[in-house]
Amino acid sequence: MKTPTIFTLSLLSLTPSILAQCTDPVPCQDESLNALNTTACQTYHAFIARGSDSGYPGHLGPLAKLVCGNLTSSADSNTTCGYENIVYPANSSWSGPTTDIWCKSAAIGAQAGQEQLREYADRCPDAKLILLGFSQGGSVALDVLGGGGGVVFNCTQEDNAALDPESSPGSHIVAAAIFGAVHRSAHQPYSVQNGGQNYNGSTPRSAAQLSDLAKYKDVLREYCNVGDPICAPSSPDQAPVNHLNYFEKYNDDAAEFIVAKARGNDSAENGTSGDSGDAGDVQQGSVDGGAGGLKVEGLAWVVGFGVIVLGL
Image (cartoon, rainbow, N blue to C red; front, side, top):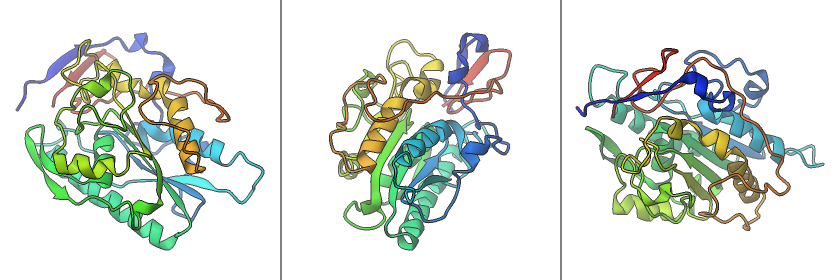
């Protein structure tokens, strides 16, 4: 097994917005966020794939709130929006006795994600679907769209086929936003141009997987920071904060993209600015956070002593 990389980070140096809410493995206490959690048929419905060892819905909760707040802000009171969690273990590579626990977890996530999307689209044929994923969940979301499997870290993930964008449920997906994915490749047309797009993830994707993912390039936006030890491990300035600050840096940008795509506005181009720029008619939001703790892919646990163990 690869020797863990040790990062030291003062938790006090992080702004509260970096410390994402509802990430602990306990029930989320955010009532406004929990109110959006439903499997009912809606106008817009998001599926969230959380990061390793996080509780539901993890770091992506504030983005889901921001997106739904904007999609339901029109005068049409019949417009509805909410989310459901992709139900899977989200085990980090350090959370179990065997080295293949990450691969087993990700394979379960990819299968569950496709099954949940398929069931929802069959039951709610008029719904527009949104896919969100962070860290291991980012890889899971990419697996859901473009197929997954193969050697990742020191284990082999079971293969799963891609979703066909021309048939349900793939044809119902109007937007997808991915952050800090483990299993990703450099120089893809859906990657934000912030520097991280030039680096492979911890494991690059196969040619067949990339070909299938490219079919979703018009509705997919992927974020990877330079210095993120998960999605760009060969890039300079490696630090855990570069894996944790996506939602401080990019929530408004991602929300603008998702809302535009969901409403059928193709002016939101992929691969543009990596910073949160002018959000147009999208209301900008802040990322609330708590100081409970931070998790990174393959993380032993981040505690108040400020030592991060990042083992892949």
